[in-house]
Structure formats: structure tokens, C-alpha cells
Image (cartoon, rainbow, N blue to C red):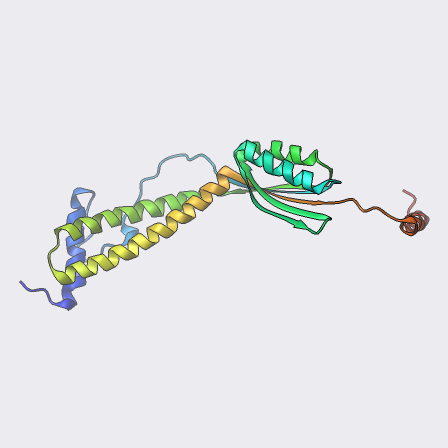
Amino acid sequence: MRITPSLLPAALLLTLAACGASMEAAPPASGPLMLEELTVQPRGAQQRQVAQQAGLSLVANDLPAVARTADSMATALGGFVETSEMRGDDGLRMVLRVPAPSLDAALDRLASMGRVRQRSIRRQDVTAQATDLDARLTNLRTLRDRLRAHLSQSSAVGDLIQVERELARVQGEIDALEAAQRGLQGRVALSGIQLDAERPQVLGPLGLLLTGVASLIGKLFVIR
């Protein structure tokens, strides 16, 4: 029987449903094979995944030495320097990536290089996001396998074009989600540290005088 173009989508969906019968229960014949119909069984309790981002601000005399120490420390811990920027002679900014279990030790080592002005750690629980990505990828891969199976069995030109178009769309979504998953896994495995360091200010005679005057004036208003 010759299938007209207007009946191709319905014929394709019915065939896909039949191909998937050996894998799991087929969806109702009256409706299309949709991504939402492919459900994933829960895996039980999942270990929580946490992404960490730290910040450290220092005052140090030797900024090049701070940069060298930070670079060698990150490498020794199994991490790397993401960015490094010297701002003139008086400022340094670096972004480091270090293994999550070594974050506190890395901050302690960097803090020993000067006087700490500010130190912070922000932690974000990304367990739900990771679980959602995993479930969506499982669904899409199952659908992709069904499409490939149908493609290998089909001989009608119109049917092949329809399946190839849908297969390309599904594969594009898989590629995008896999990239997002790798990025999230990287954030969990390697914690970020933004390091800002600057040289101490050296006041001249007039600066010292004004600082002393300002201190005396302040004590006139606040005793303790």
C-alpha cells in the first residue's frame, strides 16, 4: 500500500511504538511517541553534590611570589590556574580551580602569603540539577535508540527522511545536555578560588599626619 505524505507522521509513530515493544510497554497507538512517555525508574538515595566557590583578598608585599605560589600549589593539588592578571605593579587577580576536598588547605596556604582582608566560601547544592540532567539524558538516549532501530528497518524514502530529521533533533538535545552535565560535574569536582592581592600602601609624612589627625578627631566622638 502506498503511504501518502500526509499520513507519514502517523505511520512513523505507530512503527516506532511497535519497535519499542520489546524494550518496554508501548505507548497507546492513538497518541504519538513523546519524550515524556519514556519514564526513568528512581535510583534510590543519591549522594549529594555540592559546588563550591571561594574568595580570598590579601595584602602582600611580593605579588609575583604570590602568583608563583598559587600556580604551583594549584598544579600540585591536581588543579590549574584558570585566569591570571597583574594590574599594574600593585594588583593581582587570579582564578584557581582545585579539587574540592583540598579547598580549605588551598585557602590556608594562600592566606599565609600575606594579610587576609576577606575570606569566604559559597556552597551550592546541585543534586537536583544533576539528577534532572541524568533523567533527561536517559530518556533521550532511549528515544534515540528507538529511532535508530526504526531507521535500519525502514525502506520508504519519506519515512526515512522523517526519522532522520527527528534523530538529528534528538541527538542535538543529547549533545547539549551532555555538555551541561560535564560542566556541572566539573564545578563539583573542582572548586573555584578567586584570589585578589594588592601591595600595602606606604604613607608619606603628610599622609601619616592626616591619618593621626583623623584618628584624634574620631576619638572626640567615640571613646570605645
